[in-house]
Length: 327
Image (cartoon, rainbow, N blue to C red; front, side, top):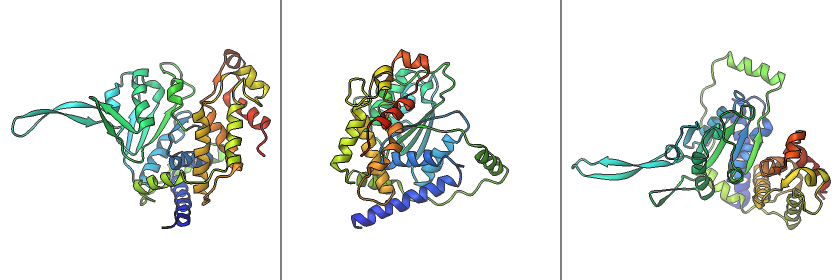
């Protein structure tokens, strides 16, 4: 298969996945597109939204559509790191001999739903760091690779903060995108109620395989990112720093620290994935605004003045987009 054929195949897969997820998820087109962009970019996504708006259903439908192994971990304060990664257990053989063997935890899957990740203690949250960055788990001094692809979709409730442990900046930085899942509109809610009164649709055939998704992730790295696009990404990210060139007044007033270099990489990888999903071998700067906030909203550190005045990261990032010319 030529490169042009592979790029065309990726566009077909993206559209087929949109249709399959759209059969069970009403609306949320932007959320679905961003999740698929994270998948093809080889990153992880943090979904933030109130309960009951279809976050779990979206993830499960995606795993079924790509014929991938799926695990769900319900994070709670009493969850231990070994409950996530796995542990050594004593195995008794048929001849009476005993030995320790590693029993894999639920993290050993292609698609992992980390439900309400901010309800686990920092010790358990830290168990995800190596897996998300290195794609491996170290136990008993031995590193064990995770399946390929490995895609983490974590959820958190932005409203109920009692009994939660906010993710530290180091862990937030591991997520390629932070996606705000909106509440359905009135029209969408009417359709959701109508769907609930009918028998559930039968499970369709998988659209693709996990192996093909892995090959598409590798292909996304070869998408051309022109020098002027790279320079624009760098200018935008530096403008999120109070001392950065071109930073708007809101950044200098409300931001404690700007986005990390991982933020620039997240935008670049997202642009490459979006190009493949559109059937193009090159990235376009016109798609930067759609990725700018998901890639950077969790990478800004706001000061106390911003919190006191109710200023959000999205508002500041909107000011940055307005201050830095995209041409």
